[in-house]
Length: 396
Image (cartoon, rainbow, N blue to C red; front, side, top):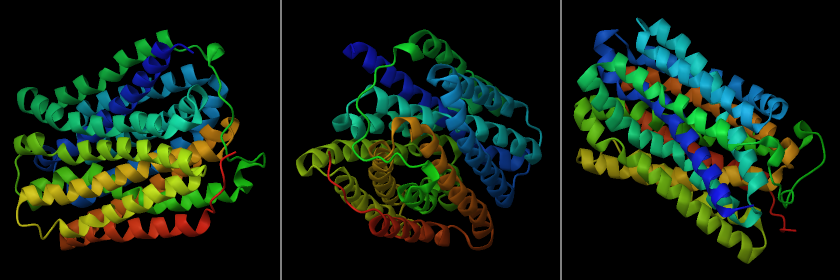
């Protein structure tokens, strides 16, 4: 496979993830404006965000079969086109109910990105580089969040929040053209199957349930920062939307640094120990400890210190995130991979929906202290499940 073609495909997948998070993050960035203009309460926003995640969970269950039926080229194109239109329609919302409906549509469509991307990387790239390349692909999420802050804040300030949604949502339609011109399912190369896999039916494999339980508890840490960080900086630290646009992207940049670092060292450890599971788990243990840094945020002496603690936590999530994806690539046969990622991401979204919905009530009643404290506790719970449910196996 020509190196340029492989890198171009990886770039397109990373950009699809970036666009996915641009569209997802946009509502959180303009939340301070919408609080006044359409009278959104924290409980309203918590319900809207939970509805997005419930729809995202449902979409994950659909994504694997759709991608396997239509192929990677048309399957991912369908999801990207649908979510881009849903993102643009946010600009016409008149009420909290309108936003809830649109977030449901967005959630169902955005679910297709990860099952497709993980499957492409598993097919196109050798096992000893997959964690790093998965980190690059998954890193588009943080880049989307990084760009979302200044982009949405700037467009909303200059042209209004409705025009900002229309402009940002249309980016995915441009990406769609390049994807359709670049990918041909019939010419996909294929490396050997993953080192650890079973031919048993997917739902009978204990590793699937272990990964589902682990992601149910761990991923809500990320969803908390995606949905609630801009509001915390506004309500808890008194920053204006312009100030949030200037500094709010920093924790999302550090999550990318965590993904690249975690992918690189995980691949190195896997080769040196001939044991991918032990390598992934070692890096994830460090990530779980760092995610607990959220407990120090509310008592930080300044906004800068608070952002530093948050950034340490998101760096830890980056270490965790890339390796949980690599475990999928290591553990499932390519014919089962997209569906397996769909199942475990559905579990992570269900956990995120529950946590996000409860966060709305906690923030409205008690403020952010208990919400940040919970992010530290659930990261340790997630690693404990991972440690005791997945036994190390040698690389073959």
